[in-house]
Picture: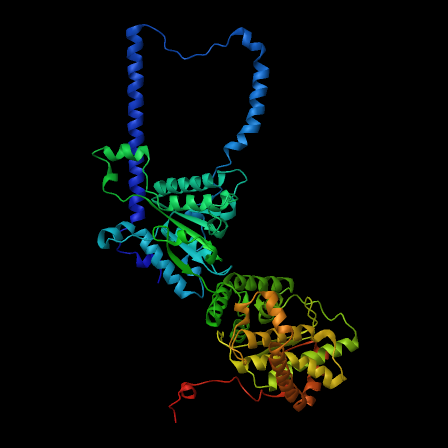
Amino acid sequence: MDTQMELEGLVDDIERARKAGINARKLGWATVLTITLLLLVVRDIYRELSGGDLGFGLHVPSIASAYLPAVVLIALLAGVVVAPMFGLGRSPHQVVRPSDIDVRSTDILGAPQTTEMIDQLIREYRNFATLQERFGASPPRAVLFEGPPGTGKTMAAKVIAKESGVPFLFVSGSSFQAMYYGQSSKKVRSYFRHLRRLARSYGGAIGFIEEFDAVGATRSSMGVSQTTDGVTGVVAELLVQLQSFEMRTWIERIGSFGLFSPARDMPSPRFLVIAATNRASELDPALMRPGRFDRSIHFELPNANARKDMFLGLLELRRAKGNVSVESRTVERVSSMSSGLSQASIFRLVEEAGVSAFHSGRDCITDDDIWSSFTQMTLGRSAGVPYGDFEKLVVSVHEAGHATYRWFGGGKADLGVVSILKRGEALGLTASYHLEDRYLVTKDDILDEIAALFSGMVAENLIFGETSTGSSSDLRRASSMALKYVTSFGMGKSQISIGELSPQGEVALLTSEGPVKDEVTEVLNQGKKRSKEVISSYASELWRLSLRLCEMEELDTKDVESLLGQRPMSAKTITLNDLDPFAR
């Protein structure tokens, strides 16, 4: 629901505080001007009575004129040396006015829970006085946004400032650090001083600190002589500033004494500090206590449905201009295969699709542009086929082996694309995906994945009677999965997690010989045996797919299906009846 619609019927305390501050400053300056005029009148009266001259003209002695150039030169040199010192403790923030912010809550796509929390925070902030009067509650003074990079933390902070109609003070955590002792804490004080000043002018202000872990890291070395000011001093200053009282200026104090001052019954201006980090575990625990960062909002990577909504939303904005022609099947396919991409990555993917359409000379974004930008972002930019005919055939057989096992092996993953185009260090690739994001992996899933990794090596050995070095990366991944199978997931004979009990060097020593090595080898051999059974059963299909891949260089699911037929076994599904031990 739109925040503006939700706020209808409620008194906006931010607007009330803004008007109160303006009226208080007007009355304060009027008082100052009145006192100044009275002093001028008194001076003129005194001059008439005394008959003297109260001029303040300065007369430079003639002897000093000879030394004047030297004095001016020394003053200039001193200014060059000393002037930069006055700016060391300045706040490094940038002020963004609400009118300059071009994002709203409707721009946060694919994250309904996050949007709801942001809307609630806006309601609390804009009606802080009403919340206090009716329920005796106060909105948070500071909020922590934590989550992986690119999940929309900065955008959400801008949305809060935009919807609240208050300025946005952006600063990076690392910019508070200074080479001189005490200057880092001074920058923090200066930042909060500017924040309070703008809050008084606009009725409120949003302070946003990016990469907060650069200044809010835990004070593990507290009390040690080598402790740096950038660790303990800044954290201590943050604690003080976050829990300090709201102080009024002398103008507001003068205005509040008047009988006609509206500031007496108006709420005091309030600011909100928002800090963003992707390493919340490294923050000092004192910062997370009540009165400092009272609330923490977690930003997660989007799941398959959220990614689909984001793609559709971004494409819809461009479709309104008539320059998008993308089928929903392509969106579903890319959404399923883009697990792990953040909101920023998805936005960039759609932008790259537009760039691809521009360079291709098309008038609109097509499915090919979406797929091309997706493969470049997730798989790497294609470098073509730089190898000779025989190596091209070897790579085709290797990748066809992976695709054959994925197609006929009965695994849960679907085949996405098979390619022999060189991308980075990879001579080819076989990409698979799941229709839905998965958070749990079973024992059979790991064995199936190990078998799929061995299928390229098995296919080479079946066709050529030997294997090449192209299987080295597959063997490394299979070994890593088998090691976790035995030592981390508790799926082997031992239930001990070696990774938790021993340092990394001892883990390597324990797995280099003895029962751990034997069990890891057994798991690898079991996966390789499983791969051989599938590849040998579909040797003719493997060869046909190899020749077609060698010819076309890249095949998608439709191409493989037209060559090998419909996939015989779909993804495995488990119902509640399968899990019910009492089901008959």
